[in-house]
Each structure stands twice: as C-alpha cells, then as structure tokens.
Length: 296
Length: 266
Picture 1 (cartoon, chains in turn blue, brown):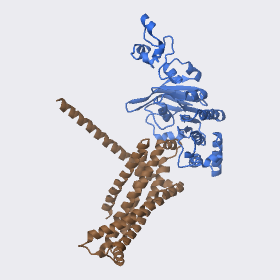
Picture 2 (cartoon, chains in turn red, blue):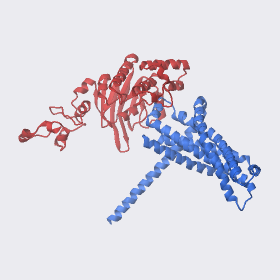
Picture 3 (cartoon, rainbow over the protein chains, first blue to last red):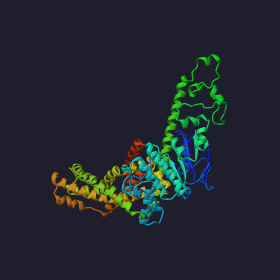
Picture 4 (cartoon, each protein chain N blue to C red):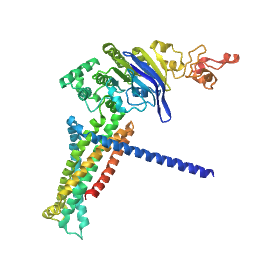
C-alpha cells in the first residue's frame, strides 16, 4: 500500500535519512522504532507530507506522492487518506472537544449539523469516551483523554492509513495499554493500516505485525517482533533490551556489512568499555586476571 | 604577521556573520511579503466563517476599549498642556483648539492608538500562533487540509482593519474630552474659545486620512504578529522573543507607514 524507496533527507550538512526503504502492506500495523535522534520523526513527517525528500520517493498504491521537487500543494489530494495522531494530540486549544472533531467535517464535507453530531458521537464512542466530553476544553483533559480525542478527530474523516507519532509517550502503563488496544481494535473493526512511530518497545511487541528499526538514518531491521528478538545485531539488542552499553551477544564471528565492522571494533581502544565481554584477543596471562563483570 | 593574519580572519568571520544576518533579514522580509499577499488573497473567504471574524472583533477590539480610553484621556490632557506651553508668548490662545484638534485627529489619535493596539494585539497574535506552532497545532491543521492562513490570520486581519479605525475615532473623541476637562480645570481659556478653536480650520479630510491610516495600521499589526508567530522557535523563550519582535516591528512599521501616508496625501 505504502512504499518508501531510497528516501534521503539532509538538513545542511547533516544527513538525517540515508537510503530508507520500507514497504507497508494494507491492514498491517507497522512500528518504526529507534533511538532518539535516529530519524523516526523526520521519516514520519515525510510520510504525512510535512517534509519532502532530497532523494528517493514515497509511493501510495504505486502512485508517487512525495519526491524531490514536488510542490507541497500536490500532496494535498492525498492528505484525506491519512489520519494522524501527533504526540500530545495537537488539539486546537481554543475549541472544545466537539468543535475539534467537527472542524474538519464542517470544512470538508456537506454533512448537516445533526449528522456531524452523530459522527462525533460515534468517534468518541470508538475511542471509549462518553458524549459528555464534547463540551470539555482540551486543557481540562488528561493526557490519555487528549490522545483519545486526537485519535477520534483523525477518525472522523475515515482515513485509510493511521499514523501515530509516539502515541504512548508521557502516558502511564495502564493508559498505554488502552491506547495499544485501541490501535488493535481499529485494525480489527475497520481493517485500518497503521504506522506507529515509537520508542516504547513493549507497545511495539504487542501491536506490531512488523517492526522497522532506524539507526543513524537507515533501516537496520525490517521484520516481525519474533524476529527482532532473535536478531544478533548488537545495536538492535542494545535498543530492545534498553541497555546503555552495547552487549555483544554473538558467540561466533559474524559481520554486519555496512553497519559496523567487528575487526575495527576489536582493534578499537574503547572496545572494552563498549562491550560487556571484551573483544580483544586475549593472551593466556590476561585470561587469568580478567573478569567480565569488571567491565560493567 | 600572525597578529595581522588572525586580525584578517576575525574580520572575515565578522563579515560573514553580518552577511548571514542581512541574508536572514531579507529572507524574513520576503516571507513577510508572501504572508501579506497570501492573507489579502484570501480575504474573500471571510464570508464563509463570519462568526470567527466577529469573535475576533470582540476579543481584539472591544476588549481594547478600556486601555485605549484611559490612554486617550491622558493624551488629550497632555496635548493641551504642551500646546499652552508652546504657544505662550507668540500665538493667541484662540488657536489652542485648532492645535489640539489637528494634533489629535491627524496624528496623535491614530498613531498612539495603533501603538497601544499593537502592544496588546500583535503580542497576543504572535504568542497564540507561536504556541500553536510549538504544540504542533499548525501541523495538525495542515494534515487536516485546513489552511492556517485562512482560519487564523485572515479573520484577525479583518477584525483589526475594522476595529482599529473605530477605536481611533473613540480615542480621538475621548482625547478631545480630556483636553476640554484640562482646559476647564487648568488653563486660562474659556470653554467657548476652546470649542470655537476646535471647529476653526477643521477639515473632514483630516478624519478620513486618519481612518485610512488606521486601516493600514490594523493590517500591519495583525500580519506582523502572525509573521513572528510563524517564525517563533519552540519553547517559552522562543515565544517570548517572537512577541517582543512583533510589537517592536509593528511600532516601527506604524511610523514608517504614517510617514508614507503623510507624504502621499498631505
């Protein structure tokens, strides 16, 4: 449904996205994970047309919707196919909940006010909120409620693809689980395709059909949650285990071409600090005195 | 030799910084001009959502009345006192009313009202839009295919263009009232003499030019506030800087346009 081909983006001299390739199938929930500053949000903004690439392209049903030199107004015809939930929900704080949901309906559809009220009621019900919330201002809502209202606002226009930018950051574990369940229920009830940008690996495991991990502007993993757990890439293991230091989990010799060079790391002076198990070739006298626990 | 070389390098770096500053200034002026034209190109869309404009007319205009009223009263009083001081010894006091009327109607009324309006409204618009930018509300509008200029800037601009002339007229009325009270209490001129002076050499064209000026000032205040709101960096400091730049730039532009209008029409 959505294909990202060789996407590149730089800001000045800084390369943020470097040859991103990703395919998202219809009805799939794809989580894009990565460390802070890895380029997840920049990729997200490319997909929703807030940024445009310096190289590569994005295709929607095989139609190019984003490529270098495109006019921002050309993307507008595709916008209605996307629904977006921003981090913090981005509710219009001069309007109450009902007006937030009604705003896009009044401007883009010919529904009567009573039809709009019905649609608002259905959307609020879908996200587990009562109709009384319509008159509340965004400042009166908790973080979880704001996320759900933001989701309801995205759903009123009946998008085909929902995008979530860190939907569970700043939420407590229980609310996080509720949002995860909502994302899953949208797929079950509406067959919705979802792309979730997150650094919450627990949520990614729960909801994803596919996980893509970005590291230094490249996709270094693209597969199922089960596959990512088994991955022997130390950068992936470092992220999914939440460890400050790289943990070298591989017993044998494996080289991940283009991602890091084992030989270079072995020779590196900092390899002992980076890895829990030292990578340098040890002399017999070293083996007698060295304790792996000392490197933590 | 090394000192000379390092001096040349420092001059080079300073020159580059100055060049970058001017380049960014020109880019900002370009964006301001684009926003100006984009706003006026969408004015006809006001009629689809007139309730938003009416709401802004109340918030930006009516709610400015108390502040402008106080300032106008003191403006009129101060004008009388200064006029009496300047005229003593060389001009008859029967021309006091003329001087006060001309000063207030042609210049002080529109300009001081616009300055006070800018201090309140330009900062408010810059703060609102800067905060919306920081909380991704502007991005949310864009992804919902809602034109932020149409929904945020055009109604505010229209409200300012309508309300600032009305506020200026109200301010001129109160200023002359304040002047009259000061004359009664503090100046050795009869009320009849003063009121006769107000009507002497009164030219309705002065009022029309004053109103035309305030319409230009109103548009300037709204678009300047919006421009710096869109340019605001995220966070409290970014929004704070945007509001300061909005009011300072509005004040400068009000004086520039005042000069240009005076040059063209007077």
